Image (cartoon, rainbow, N blue to C red; front, side):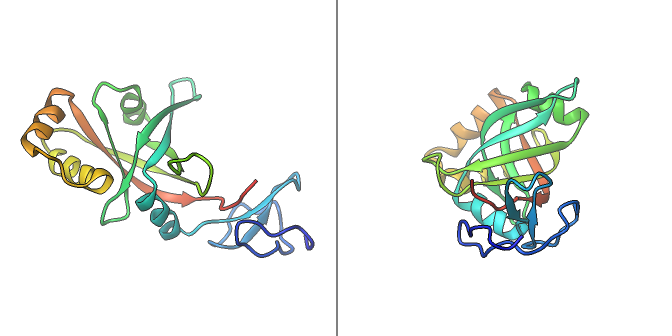
Length: 176
């Protein structure tokens, strides 16, 4: 597939087997319909984007197999897991208790610009075990809180849980 234009800082695509679903990170690929191409993204590169851009859409799977999507704020912990705070009573939590697969589309504040899609499996950490993780999540997304006692009370009142998503795949890293 020589001759396709470069995009987003990438070089032109090379000849590939478009039917291949297993590609090393950074290896170019061409869609089966030959309409676009991209590169698999390294998970550490995806984590770097998430550390800078916290706005995302989280997708989980409903009982009937269709997607359920929610706007969220996301961070990355020291173990490389994506972190999301939500309520115990949220539909996404019910969905994840049944099927831990999750997808995040992470967007810049201004919507247009660099974005990344990641997928993985979520672990749900409930209170009281979640409190330290919720505090860490807040610091990573917003910095220090003015009153940590008020924050902790709000987490208990709202029945907050922490989603820890172990990332399995990122990308494709493409534009267009």
